[in-house]
Figure 1 (cartoon, rainbow over the protein chains, first blue to last red):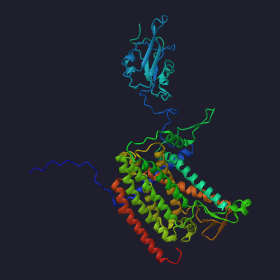
Figure 2: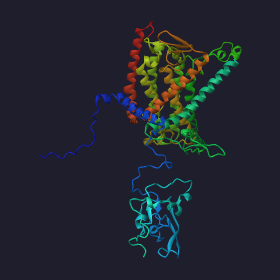
Figure 3: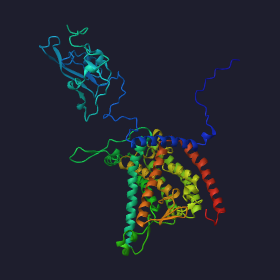
Figure 4: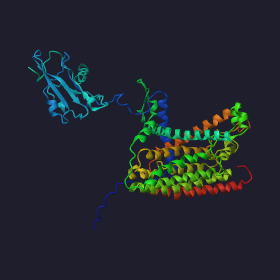
Length: 191
Length: 382
């Protein structure tokens, strides 16, 4: 007769040794481990070093953000310092949380890009940092820096990211995607 | 008469102030020690701003205790609609008051001679001396057990009167657990009573200032190392702290017997628990760690094992004893916090079988061995 299939038992058998079952020595070992960690960290604090893995937020920023981390939104700039944004509202349309508000302006002097954002604001109390705005942008005008934004605020009205703040980013330092030099025509850019 | 009154009022103020300070500071110590033990920073955001300036005092998060206290004082005192209001209102106090009363018999310093301390008052005090202890009672240790037994009633009252299943379960657990461990605790100190031949805590401490086996300080932990471990375990269980926090196991019973308590009533339970840490520390210090004395130290100064003596002035002795007692209590408290943040919680049946099948027999064995040894040494100093 065929033996019925026996399901394998996955839980661990109680394989404690007598020494472990005596309990007290193992407790002592645990206490030695935890107090060792305590003393090591205390020594670090006492000698002026940091005895914790925690970073103070928001006073400290972690150094080990991934390069592709979707953090604070930034607006890229033209060489003359004006935002590259053409206020097409694509990002605001695609945004699932509907947090981007753009008010377009008209600048007849700049014939190549007459439409520009007068107001470009993101409500960080509702932003989900999905990065869809970056993907939707036809002009590579909005990107996400790897640093996290300074989110903590006393109330939600202080959590709006304004145009001035988004323009503080220095695009020249961006190595991954070099900023097009002046005069170089962008593919798919304005005629 | 007036002198006695003044001295004892000072003692009471000192003891109550010390316990309250311990209760408050231990909340901070617990947070910070746990944080350092687990590579964290710990609570450090509460601050006191100096008025009219922007200087914010953080002081390593010491003000979190104050913030907690204020929060508890101004919170809504929520009460369930179907509750036994009298027992419900009395229960926190039944838990809190005995915890403070236990300290009355614990000596926190040696003999105080105010006349020698303040020579200008020598005439008024007329050579009176006072042991630094609120109540010098013959029944010292019995009082400790009588009062700490009363907290069981408070916990069970709270659990019963809240009209809540979780509270009731917590109260039942608290009752059975505390009664079991009370027994173990009593049996472990019986060995010490046999050795010192007294239950008066003051004279116990005085006997511990001698020398045992020629060089060791005659502390209780030297005579009864096994009982010291058992006592500590039973005391932590009695105080319902992790790994024995079954009565208030959050994952099973929400908050156990004080689920239905809020605001300062709940604060009293918490405060009582933290003061009890200090009480356990003080008891352990007094019984096993030589109380307020440094090794080889007595009320006159140091008597080193080689026969050399070192006399100290009365003021220096009193100050040393007060400070040494506080430091020892703090160290024992810190050890309890270390245990609390190291061990995982027992299962409920394990807690009780641990008490009745493991610790009680061990305590009895310890007692028998001690009795035989004391009997064989009868007449000769141990």
